[in-house]
Image (tube, rainbow, N blue to C red):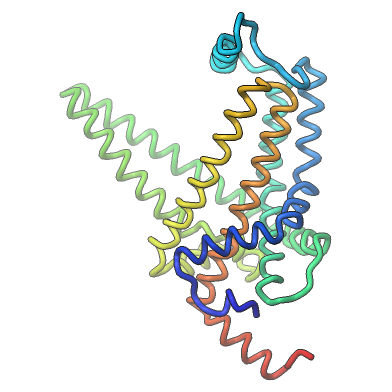
Length: 304
């Protein structure tokens, strides 16, 4: 057992391990993402190219760089999307539903091998992930439906009560909307955090859809888990936003822009998957005492 996984980690240690493992195994994790998601990125790029999107630079006309930049933003905001963009969005959407969970599962399996100090290969990790394809897909679809349903109900409830409040008093209505937004947002965050570790539970414990197991793992660890998810999410948002702004400034909405942005998204998804796995194994250790189990197994069956 890797010494970093033999005891419960503090908040900062989880983040430190996430950065360390992401750095030390960057090529392995990125290769997993490229094998599974890379073909869809290339297909999306080909469709954009064939439907008229500029390859290297696709900016709106203007007399200066700033004017071109501003006009491009207006085009993106107000002009209807092209057929290529629509098809590309559908492809990436399907990839997100089907392939991203598989890539995350493969990365989690590699983290488990590192944790156990076992040899691993990219191909075997992907193969093991696909051996749980239907449970992972079904659980991910269920989680997606739950998330969409939560936000749909939240929007309806907030809109109705805010509108009713505005009829009687605009200030009261707006205040009611803000309070409801915060309250319902907190409830959604609570349930998504408690159910958020369903994927590794499905992969390792064969308990699809894994929501109950995730709920059990996060018992007495909600705030810590929620905080880690928030920090990892903020890191990803900041990195993605910086690169998106940088690429957009020089490349516009070109094919190269879409490829580079997709690669950045692969890397940030990879980073989150590493942190996600570490959170799961840490909570599993806290709840199940995995270190004691492994020590007993190693004592009974010592490795040469």
